[in-house]
Length: 312
Image (cartoon, rainbow, N blue to C red; front, side, top):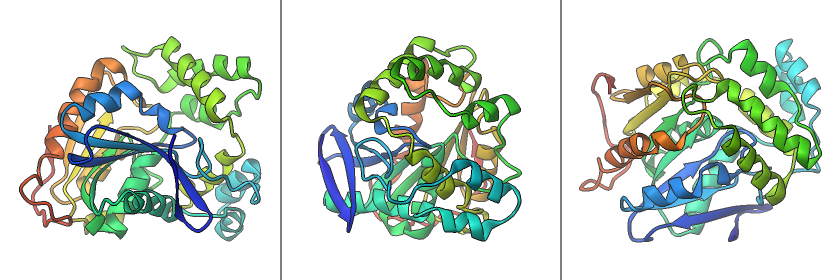
């Protein structure tokens, strides 16, 4: 597994699929999940469509740099945010969502890639949005999947999903794997697969079990603030994908994102939750392939788009 230093003190683990001469697609994973949550078969299927696919571990996850010299008490962090004591919360976390966005773009630089299509899932969608609004010349197109805008009134979790995501997972391997089935609460109702959840949990535990990074990533995410004003000004071609079964990030998060970004396309997928079930890969990859073909004859990023939101 290649690992490259992208900035002083920060190294990022990554993997590529396909022909480097094809259009690059950077896959950005979500909260506390390693890059292997982008299933290898999913990546290869996208690569077979003529895309050079890059997946990577965010900082504090997987095989990328850990910030263990900055411990975060998740309970204290949540209490500070809930009480509105944002200065105290900010003082607890060592990096921001912008730092995580810079990691992905700096990885592209290290790979000799000036611009890429960026696809982000969940917190990865927030990171991808941040890439697009702060460094638009690096982003050919944006695909924001099962994500939201940072506005607290949109994309809320159901009480059941919130209870699961807030519960610490067991530290032992057997318990950790068994607890993965809790994620069915936000999975696709039709396609939820307990065996697949257990397999991913086992592979993740064996590859790089690192619960200490969860609090720091959480801090970066919840303190990222609203991107609404920036998204209104975004001129990067944008596709928003959201599952109608999503209870972790309510579909209103995707709808709001598409409403804000000029010319954005919105794909709401029936039967999809806060996951990417294998049965829906063809539909998801069809949408990504079509969207990332937009600039085939116009490779410049930051293309002006000023059309009403189109719902697919």
